[in-house]
Amino acid sequence: MRLKIVQTGEPVLRQRARALSKEEILSEDIQRLISDMRETMRDAPGVGLAAPQVGLPLQLAVIEDREEYLRDLRPEQIAEKERRSVPFHVIVNPAIAAAGDTEMIFHEGCLSVAGFVAVVPRWRKVRVECLDQKGEPRVIEACGWYARILQHEIDHLRGTLYLDRMLDQTFTTTDNFSRYWKDKQIKEVCLELRAKHGE
Image (cartoon, rainbow, N blue to C red):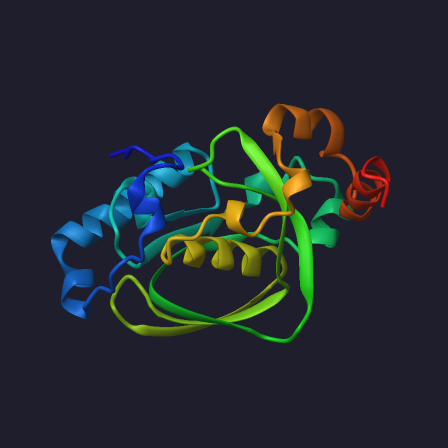
């Protein structure tokens, strides 16, 4: 069943989600929620969806970056973002830490901030400790775009949106992003914006 994705301004997006016990994770309700969130994410389409985005303050998110999403990207865009397909999986009660001190900046959107994107700095590599959809412990070490997805979804579980981290002057509609920025490398975007702001 497709769920309604709530938009920025809904209080649930600004509260810290609560942890789930193993018993809760294995319950029929949560397993059904995972299935519904998967369907909702794919229908959107998106690469991640956190429970607060469907109105539930639970520390649970689904993630999947499908091969078909990479087809419209040029090889240099895929390389620049270090992007690859990521199979469907669930993270519950995640703890995240940067793995190294390198930050990367790229345009980022959100299903709960529909119609907009902005440049957002994120750690290039992260380490996540969490439970999977069977309630089993899992450690994920990720870099590039996958690390960005994890950071974005885990932010949702803490009441944070990319709006809190973005470079303000890069905030744009998705239409204008497609018109002006989509085919440019991130270095070009930043140089042009600095030039326009007289920096």
